[in-house]
Structure formats: structure tokens, C-alpha cells
Image 1 (cartoon, rainbow, N blue to C red):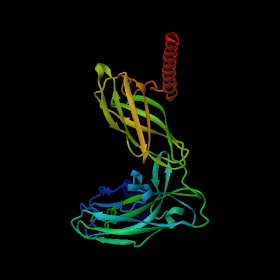
Image 2: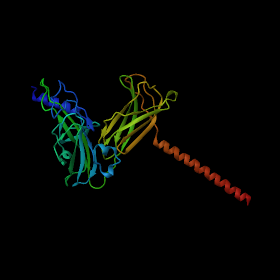
Image 3: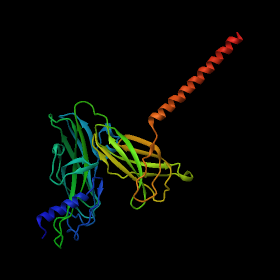
Image 4: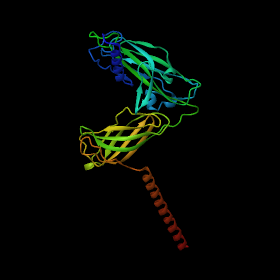
Length: 346
């Protein structure tokens, strides 16, 4: 029988493999398969979790469709309904609970089982366990009670649904734990919600160790709420007028207010070095930012190229102002000529 430290270490490893999303497929155990039963986490079952209630003010926000994202005053109580589902072919029992979370080094992180924080302690669920029939689902209500004395700031937590095998496997291996969760981003403070924003900084082309072209962009969260970055890059004006993309960025970058991080886009391996025109579009919920410019990829695998030449918003603004000035000057000349002709005719 495995020792308690080994059991805890193995469980921690398995929990780290679980995703925070709508669906999670159980990872394989290190030594054989867990035992089957009502809690069949290793017998091919899959559980999922999703919100079924979104506040009217955030219906258009894609983040609010997946996560609990809100701003409230101290002393506020509100609810959210969510659904736990399974595509298992046998009954499944899932345990429900809340846990601490945070944002570290550009990633949304969750604490080990049993760890709590302020936000997780404010969330209560109307049931702690659900039993799902084959292909079944169950609706659960979460109630969030923010204390009157709560201080200002954004807090993070996760609502978890967990399925585990009931016993270690026949060879003494540890039980398999599989869990999925819904992130919670709750900002507390008097008055209305402060704005969210982020900026795209330096953009550097490179080649990966296996020779694929990639783009790395610096991003700064300049707003008052966390941002979950998604987006894409498209190339145009390449050699022989080639165009390519769009290519999605690697997902998973989350920045807390004031944080800086990087996003990476890996492109098609057969792309020539360039030069290329590029258009990088990043979004977090309803917020969208774009950077355009020119870049060239280095020739050698593992090499880092020169920073992209970015189109300056100031330069575009000056160019537009110059064009307007020319139009105004031309219009003034036409008016002057017209007036002269009228005087001459008189």
C-alpha cells in the first residue's frame, strides 16, 4: 500500500492536470487504472461544468459566459446557477466545493485541495454532492455573500466539481482524482466598476528550437481588472505577395492589474523569413487591442530576430491631420478664386 506522502504527492500531480474549463477528460494514472464503481473516474467517464446564469449587464461579455466575473459593493449578496454534466455510461457521483485561486507569473493558478481564501469563503453551494445518471446533468446554485467590511480589490476563486475512484487500483496505485472548475473574478468596491485595459508593447519575431517561426509580444495590464488574453495574428505583404493566417495565440495568459506578461504565436513552419506586414489582435472579454507593423523572421532555428517595426498611432494621427490640413487649404483656395471671379465679373 502506498505511503501517505506518496499518495498526497500523486494526488497533487493529478489535480494539477485538471483543467478549468467546460469539460475535462481524466488523465491516466501512473500505475494501472483506478477501480470502477459509482465514482468511475478512470473508466472513460468525462465530467463538465458550465454557467447557466449570466447577469444582464454582462450578456455580451464572452468571459462572463464562462466565468463568474462581476463588480459589487461591500455587503452585496448575489447568486449564480451552474450545471454539472457527464457523458459517462454509468452513474457518477461528483463532490462540489470551492477553493482558493490567484494569478501568478501570467497564469491563473489554483491552490491545493483544502486551501481557502476570502472569496472562496464567501461562496456557498446549495449542495455538496450530486449523483448523475449516464449522460446526466444537475443544476447547482452558488450564493456569494460579500461582508460589509470587505476591502476594495479583485479576488479570485474556483468552484470545483470532482470525481474520484473509490479505492486504489489492484496493484496498490493511488486513486485517480479528476476535477473541473469555474473561475470566479470578483471585484469589490463602492460605486461603479473601474475600467479594464491592456497595452501591446514590443513584438519580437523568432524561430523555435525546431525551426518554426513564432511571434512573442509583451503585454501590460493597465486597467483595474484581470484580463484573460486570447487573439490571433495575420500576415500579409510577404515575399511574392504572400499572405498567411490568422494564427491563434497560445492560450492561458492571465494578467492581474499592473502585471506584465508575454503572449506567443507559433506560425506555419513553411513560412519564408519575410519581410511581412502583420496584424496582431488581442482581446479579453469585450476589450480588444490591435498592433500592426512590419517584421522579418530570423533564418536559424532557436534564433531571436529584430523587434518588429510598429505602426505608430501618433504617426497615423499626424498623417491624418496633415491630410485634413491640405484639404482645408485646398478648399480655402477654391473659395478665394470663386470670390475673385465674382468681383471681376461685377
